[in-house]
Image: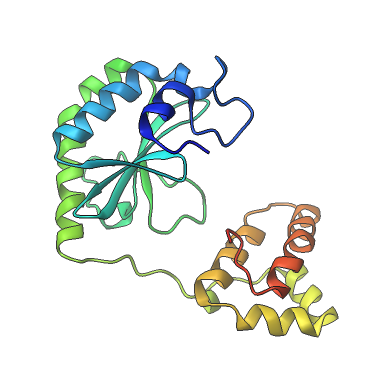
Length: 206
């Protein structure tokens, strides 16, 4: 995994086999990423490398990240759900995303056209952080528990006990992961793969 931002912009995050090759997505969006990077730094954000990605902070707190995908590059706000989004440009990264919101860019002209708007969103995100505002996450008992997981816990009392002994954040992570699969077969496969970690008291990202 990439440990510094310069390497990310040159070679990618290093989390897949495409890192360091011409096929890495950072090369697809090189011009857009550099323009976005300049805007973020000009707004007074500090640039760090976290999780192999360029992360931008204010006063030591995470504000947003830059990322390159197949069809777009993006600026992703950690507490984007708290932004007013008067222009309706923020999107969830996934159906179950609670806090983060991203803005997609598909060409240099798009970045240039929305540069000032992006600055407004960034400064609002900084003010949210300075005010100490937090996203109110749904609690684990507010999520639907997939039938496949309920059945598996009934079959394995030890799994049920281990799951309920996890921290709320870890339980929430598993339920979101299981529910994110549309097909029962995929949900079952995800559950089976996660059972050893749950029994070990670990979260999905531990």
